[in-house]
Image (cartoon, rainbow, N blue to C red; front, side, top):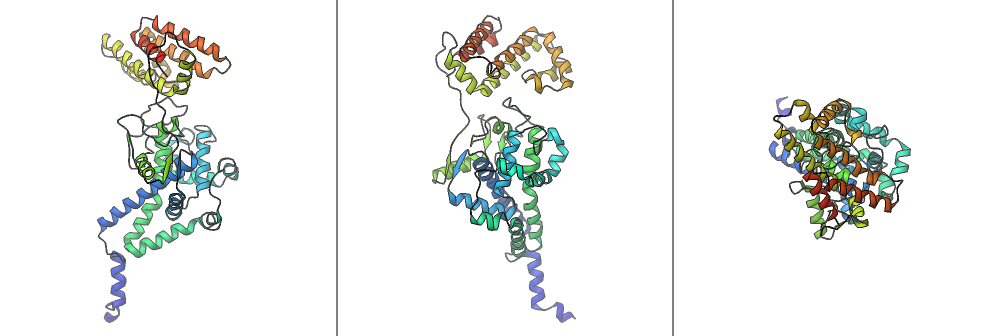
Length: 401
């Protein structure tokens, strides 16, 4: 019996189980796992998200197929399903039809059961038919990737076990959980619930942190929802999108071609009056314009409350909502906002004029000539208001190109 357990075959099997064919230490396997999961993240953000779902960049066919193959091996997701579900998310964002909105399902469900929500929507043939156009339908997609979607992750399990032994099972489990947690859970869940907003997008999207590294730049979710067809997610100087770094490298190698980046509002000499070009610049860059207006409102709030002493807790809470669209203000914050506006007439006027400015692109029933006249009247009121922040904003707006 002792001889049986001392046999070379059993010793080799025990050695393989402990270290795999590569014989790596546990920390080396961890590093490899981080590299492999990052490649999966890059495959999702560059190929599925920016290329397939939004057509924000073109990728060389060889690069496309590498990503398709890697996603088949590490996630079992197909291009058509992911693309269709994501396009529907943008089309129905925060509505009952949104496949994974925490505003609809609650944060807990999206964060921890995002993969289940994905699979449920992937079974919806109407979603695939309506939103899945323009995705691969070649022989290998029909005969392998879509038909045998579970085969790839099964092969990955075998490879992990062979190369890394028992640790390979843990590595495989990590690979399988990476996208469901970070993409389906954190981005789709927390990215519509908590964080900071650069822009007043029509939905609840937020930027999780300014540095998009772990999730490939997807952390900058509010930026993406504001400019969904942009291949670059970072907007502010302090923000970083590692996905854009990879796109830039591929572009220099002739393997990628970005189509769009976030628009930038240009400025020239101040026009005597706002005109048709001013209106065009305002509407085209409305998110950036309103973000600039929000900065002015926050500065005025600080000035007003500083002269009156320490603001109350209600007023500090109201500061968060002064620059938000009325329909986005939660019911619990409405009394606080009303208190702030009543206490500070200057802030009240800025909130009122913000809404008037917003109506210039929301009011579709007026002609272009009428809208130009409305904009000119708005600028006159702002410059005659006696409020320096409004006057300066109006002058800057008249310089917009």
